[in-house]
Length: 99
Image (cartoon, helix red, strand yellow):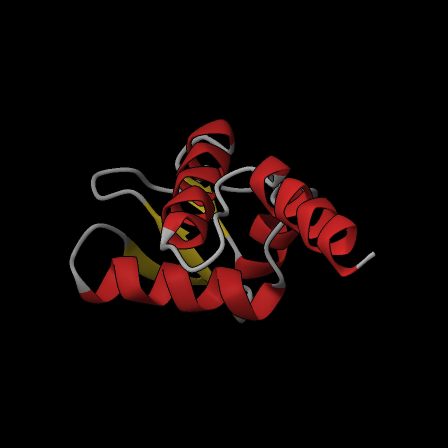
């Protein structure tokens, strides 16, 4: 019975996208998900938006976004009190003003 449980757990972990037991696949899978979410959001994203669009938690998304910003891959901007992470050279489109 323990052998069956071990095989079932192994199969479960091998099916998770970007995740391998004991490996660093989770890191790279998470980064890829996040980069794709930024691309799909026209180059800007908040940690909460990233968590909604990926399998990451808000804390995980914020950690990766901060690491990318520290390395110069993203720029950090403030918009209405929220931190917005953007690809360099891209600016968030201004909200239309209502009069």
